[in-house]
Amino acid sequence: MDWEIISPAQILYLVAVGFYLFFFALFLRYIYWKWYATKHYWRKRIPLSCEKVKKLAAAKKMSIPFFTIMVPARNEADVIANTIEHLASLNYPKDSYEILIVTDEKEILEKKEDDLSPTTMDVVEAKIQEFAGRKDVPQLRHCTVPYDFDGRYKGSRRGQSIPSTKGRALNYALEFVDPRTQICAFYDAESHPEQDVLLYIAWSWLHDPRERIWQGPVFQVRNFYHLGFITKVAALYQALSHELYLPILMKKLPFVGGTNLFIDRSLLERIGGYDHRALTEDLELGVRAYLKTGVWAEYFPYYSTEQTPSTLYAYFRQRLRWGSGHLQVCEKFRNAFHYPWEKRGPILYNLHWKGEGEWLLYQGAVLIPLTILILGMNGGLDPSIIPYQYRVVLHYLVLVYYAFTFYAYFHFRRLMAPVSLWQRIIGALQLLALPIASFFLPLPYTFASILKALNRQPRGWVKTPRTKEATR
Image 1 (cartoon, helix red, strand yellow):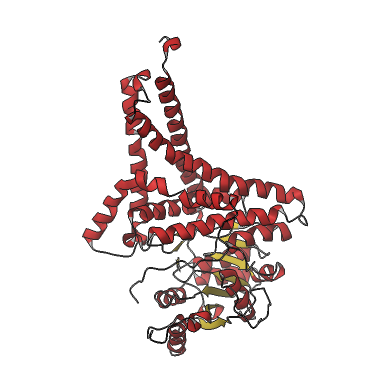
Image 2 (image 1 turned 60 degrees about the vertical axis):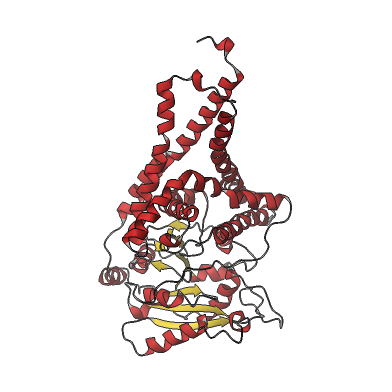
């Protein structure tokens, strides 16, 4: 080939192919992540039972830990009853854990007079009365955050309305946990964790009873068939990320999520609870716990199923808050000079790379096919520089993306709420819109970076709407 007569259109095509292969290679990391997560976590799960955990505790001359499961729930009447029932059915001695539902007084204050639907408080109080007449259920308790609570751990009432955040609600609830509590667990109002999760955490703690933080994966696929095609793809890849990539990410960042989270009670009190002003109070807590005490969050292989926002608008708003909260955490600890740079520097580096760095990279990844399409339609690319048979191979690489997406669908299908056969078929066929969906997935995070640069980032915590589920 005479390289001296290569046209600009041919050079552009080679550049486009180079980027295409680069991002395909990044996609293939899923294979490594799957091998790593399976080998080091998922295959190491052992059969557990209450008797086995009690036997270990007796051998250690200890008692099994008492858990308080805390569930913040504002405007969650549609889902909270199912969540309470699920949490009450966990495989753990019922006298060794409690469920504490945390509601918000503002739900009552903001309710319209002609609205006859039950509030979250109504549903919870009804379940408390029901539980009083049932055997083999844990203690169910309820506390309501006053409208004027300032949000701080061991805070006070101010006589004026204070913005609601998840961190604010949890700080208030920490004052109400059972005195016996050794480990606090945190779940969202629609969380359905695996049945043996408390047994696993107890087993882990009995082997190493120091102050610890455990973070498990969250698979937001339960309402899959109620999602649009963009949020369907988002749900599958979020679940894959938590199952396969989160174990690797948590080697570099003390990542803490807001649900399927367990924290030693004494540690939580020692670091002063949650930052009630944080948009992502969970990530902030994980970083602060490490910088203040040296405790690094650990991944554990027991999942919880949840919902993905059912509309594109709700999805965008939730992810925008996550992205803005991530940037907020970066800014907070960049200026936290009271922590030594030797600990703070590597955390900040990884926060920025796993935040803005990767968001920019992935936004570029989805823009490249669009750029190639536009250039190709306008004669800006000349593919003749590459032999035809190789171009065919490049075209068929897209099937790898589809194959992996459908693998994810069938892998997580058992966790999706049951629907008719026709709905399952339609739901699966919508995954064929993968290229279009992929373009939109990084947008909320990119937009968060843009708003941050313009100093227009969201400053208030936004609640995620739920999909109503059948009551059990």
